[in-house]
Amino acid sequence: MKPIWYFVGLILLVIGGILLLTGLYMFLFHSESKSVLSSLHPNIWWGATMLVVGLIFIVKNRNITID
Image (tube, rainbow, N blue to C red; front, side, top):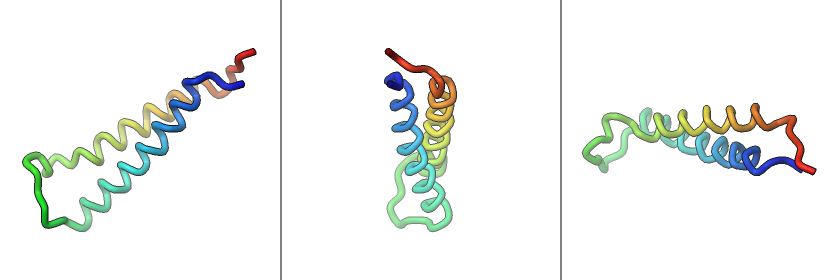
């Protein structure tokens, strides 16, 4: 059985990938609605951060089993 942190890493990886792809789409195809800090592209930053953290969790916990 895998530890809970392995599955947390999977969730972070999937959600981070979705956020990153959404941010890249919004960067390439500008939308009409603008927020105050939209020029900083938070979807790209948070998506990349969650993707990296999810990969770290998966790599650190891939060979650990719980009895």
